[in-house]
Image 1 (cartoon, rainbow, N blue to C red):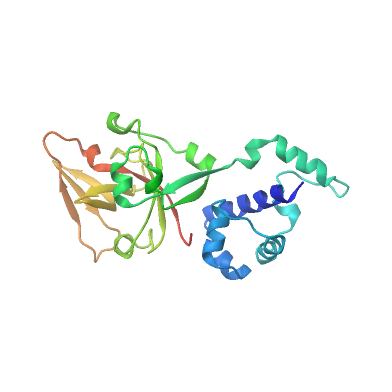
Image 2: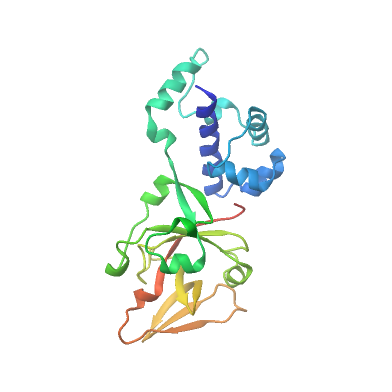
Length: 246
C-alpha cells in the first residue's frame, strides 16, 4: 500500500462518519488543529494531507491504519499485497461521488450545471445516491440529477431542527412529485418561490401549494398553480441528504 492509497482510505472513512452524523468537517479541523477550509479541501479531493497531517487526523479520530483499510490484515499480512488488492478493486476506492454545490437560482434553473456555477463540490457516498428512488416529470427527466445548496439563516430558521445556518442540502431533481417518498414521513422539498427557492414541507390544496415550515413561529407560504402548469413544475426536487459542518 502506498501513501495515496492510505490517504484515500482515510478520506472515505471520514466521509462515512460525516454522512452518519457522527462527525463534521468543523470538528475534524478543531480536533486535528487544521483550518476548516483545509479539511474541506481534503474531503473534496482538492488538497492532500502531509504525512504529519495524516497522523494528526488518525490520532484525533482514534484510528489506526488497520481501522481504515478496506481488507482485513492478519498479523503476518503484507502491506504491499494489501495495496495491490486495493488498487485492483476500483469500486473500493471510487465510492465517493462529487455533487456540485450551487446557488439557489442555478439549482432551480440550470438543467445541466455549468462549470461557472459550481461553488465547490460535496463528497457523497456513491451508493447513497444510487439508492435514491426517482419520480421525475417528463420536463426534468434529462436534467442533471443531484445538486447541493447551502442554507442561509432564513432558510434554516424556518426548518429547525432539520436545517441549520450553513448546512448543505442535497437535492434530487429527479424527484419532483408531491407523492410521499416514505408513507410515514413528511418530505422536505425545494420549491420555486418568487425568484428563489424555499425548502419546506409541501401540500397541495386545490390549485395552491402550501409551503409549511417546521418552526411554528414562521409563516406558511402559498404558491398558486397556474392553469397551464402542473404542481410538479414548481418543485425543483426532494432534499435527500443534509450535511452539517462542511
